[in-house]
Image (cartoon, rainbow, N blue to C red; front, side, top):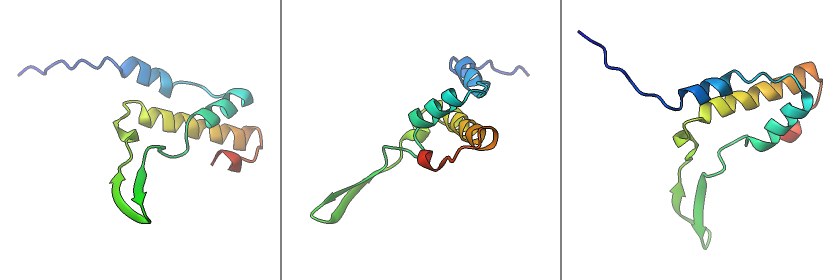
Length: 91
């Protein structure tokens, strides 16, 4: 029985994102500002105070979603633990 080969063209970039090392305060601050804390696409569409429909979060459709969230988390941890900064402005 042979196993089928799978083609994963995005895997090298995903792996690169997972291996980004955050060791500079300026880089960590930049990443925390650029990567949103929550999905910016989820919305309730309201007319005259009534919810007409809901747009679900589309971030999970992003193939790099998990890697970007992890990179933001590593940046926040670096700022809090290594730099001793207050990270509430990024939350």
